[in-house]
Amino acid sequence: MDQALRARGNRDFADRGAYEHFLQTLVHKRNQTRSRLFEAERAALRPLPVAQLAPCKELRVTVSRFSTIQVLNNTYSVPSRLIGTRILIRVRAETLEGYVGSSRAFTLPRLVGKKQHRIQYQHLIWELLRKPGAFAAYRYREELFPTTTFRLAYDQLGQASDRRADREYVRILHLAASTSESEVETALALLMETGKLPTFDAVRDLVSPPPSSPLPQIEKPALDLSSYDQLIPSRRTHA
Image (cartoon, rainbow, N blue to C red; front, side):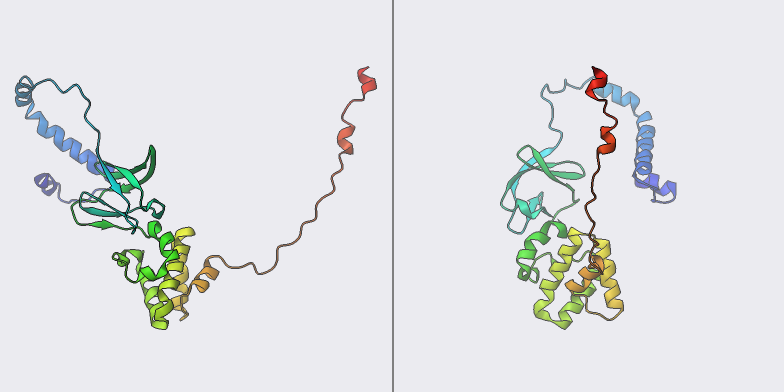
């Protein structure tokens, strides 16, 4: 592979499909020179087992009180509603599938290597909203800053009031999870650019501004069905 990529001149591909096509072409060319050896080896192969091989590896894990699971020495966050639940994990080449009973609860990208972690704030924020004080001591707290803008906003909140910074930021993060992360990020940036403190109330007003005037009252229309009665033939006509 390395020699083929060196001969190609670069390791950039337009998309995944282009990379897979490159691999398939390389394998096909390499196999053309091995056909005779392969035929000799196939003649000595034993029959395949009757039982079908499992398409993936299955593991049973319990979701921790921190809303995480350990799979093959890696840590993943899962939806907080599953805390304490025993779930079945199907480990595939690129994904992990979590099942509660026969229902699939989530699908996660699989991490490569060991002692890594993948934490999504959308999984944890509902639990943190009830216990915002846990944010400061959370082991993977740095993963709860989706972008640099969120981190800068948290730092400004901390400079203004250490006691309320965690609570304010957790509420902002909950707003991002329940509405739109990009809109919340834009609101944070606008507030900081204008020198205003990015509190939850200020962000919420920009993301979901209150109506400037009460909604107009619409009167209930009066229905007149007499015109439809004229379309119905009288009984005397049918008689």
